[in-house]
Image 1 (cartoon, rainbow, N blue to C red):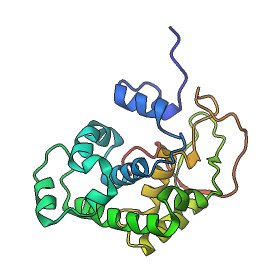
Image 2 (cartoon, helix red, strand yellow):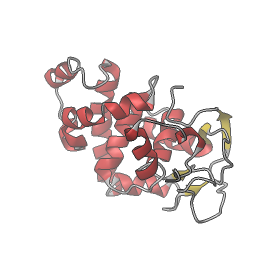
Image 3 (cartoon, rainbow, N blue to C red):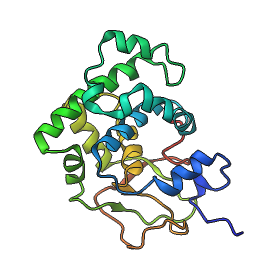
Image 4 (cartoon, rainbow, N blue to C red):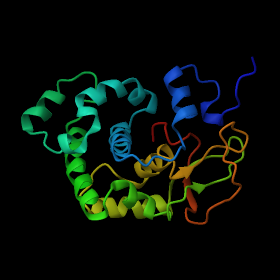
Length: 211
């Protein structure tokens, strides 16, 4: 059987969770608020670590963070946070754990203001994914003008662990930005390069690797 052609960063992977992530999630538009909160939380947890590490802990995160229900996470008190610090199934970093609770509270405020986090997020791109046509092996940016704007706005609204690099990874993860290379079997059909996200701060690895 001929193996599917994937983005350069996903080629040769032997981790089934990582391959599944590339094939079934990365770059696909997400409009479910709970899934958006999950990815925002996981991308923040990934800071300084590999994405493979986070994927291996994803099921544990879902248990520890109430299936990423922002209403429940927003109510995590000091005792619940202390218990999470003892949970070896997640990244035991106090700042990251605390930020997840803070972010859940800010997330609820955004839902109240815009009707949904989905509406807030996709308003930045007029509801349409930013499609970047990339050649094989092209170095992906660590951030763009779009991730800068969203990061700045989220910080203003009280979110933490939402720096522009983390946010660009988040945008890729939830399909606001489609960065599949043109020879990948998941390459977008629409051949259009958006001017909404000029590239800068290039890096050799995909956004899912350690900074």
